Image (cartoon, rainbow, N blue to C red):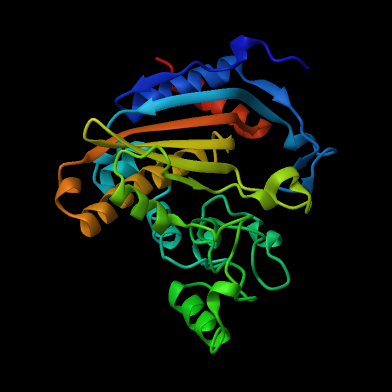
Length: 301
């Protein structure tokens, strides 16, 4: 099926989340088209009619000064599932590649997420492993806290050279979120401050399992502001988007806090700038779409 260009959303800039959600909901309801993929999260859904989705391609938007809101205000403005979203954010930035953590089970849409755990009690990937990949996978069992992972890793690596076992690319060792902080700290105007979440092992989904929806985060400083651009291949409009926005803006705030704490005076004058989100496929399940239609109709004056 060819996708008419009017079924893709043009780039828009907002200063309030309310305006974003209002415009995006109306556009999504008016222009989303049906699509039924063969798999979802690595599971065969080809014969499940309730798994049909409504979709828009190439959805992009910017919120100006999103990160200048305190945590509580940001939670309300984004409509994130609080306090879960903040608790999970703290888990993501814990500094260790814990898997599965604890907050996955507390997410309001978790449902049967536990069915994706493997026989060691871990997911085949998560954000903590992708933010902190250097030692990811070395502890071959489930861990729930950074302290637990560090303790098990220290015991495992006793007497061994850790660098020999750390994640490597073709020529170099892997970087992590902390390396992005350090890069910005020593070169504030760099264009290279990118944190990937989609890794080479995800290419082609050759393992037949889940792959990340997030591609990565690009931090860039211009005109005295730290901006964040968030790239996703896929995002559920109803179940994920508001939490995704909150978690990403919190990462923008966290990054600036780290830079101020570590690199001093220059960063005290830098403020949170814009937050931009690019989604290749913005979608939702057909039953969620019908509920969205009903709710929107009820709210129209």
